[in-house]
Length: 154
Image 1 (tube, rainbow, N blue to C red):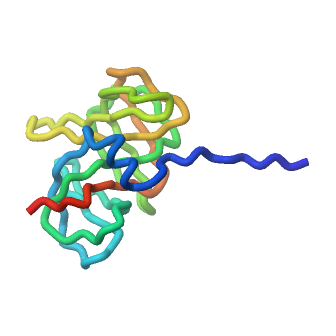
Image 2 (cartoon, rainbow, N blue to C red; image 1 turned 120 degrees about the horizontal axis):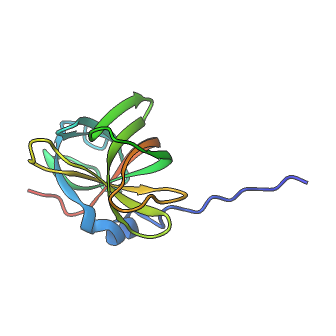
């Protein structure tokens, strides 16, 4: 007999995800993209993040308030400095400090900017969460995503 493995949905809808995690939204500049493209290039101190826009309304503008979200395939303790490494194909390896554990499946990873200009916060889903304050290296499943409010910054 074959067993079917059912995965738990990470969110009910883009709107509910925004409502739940909007405290971790940050404003970032965006490289110009064609109107209506679901792929955005978000510019951060760690380089551009190529992200899939989960919001229903098309984006057009120079910056937006985003929740950056990823799914952790694997994480491990490290002593490496905060970094973002694009591995290709929508995959990333991110190193940062666990800012907060939100519940059994979600935690916030924070990357401190060496110039102290702005820290990047990423809401991550994982089968098991690390402890707050841990410095970890996380391998993310593709795609890295963003959720944004339907209210655009002007």
